[in-house]
Length: 75
Image 1 (cartoon, one colour):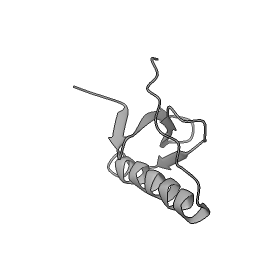
Image 2: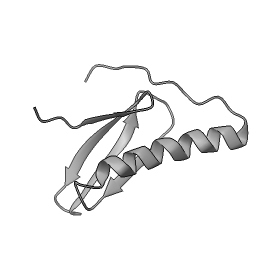
Image 3: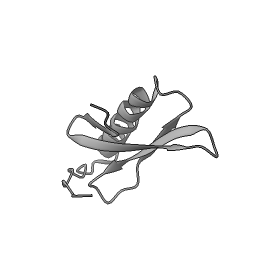
């Protein structure tokens, strides 16, 4: 089964491909903050997603703010 949805630490990321830029990119879904990630390699896109989530959670901790929780949404 092929999926363009990633899951990590309670967050979902949706990935897409840009033929023009030759890059795989995505954003974390279900939160108001815009958190994006990208990679030129399909092999590395999941790692970049994990890094984006970890960076967001670290930022929230450093700033003393509560991280947004994913709100599941229908496409």
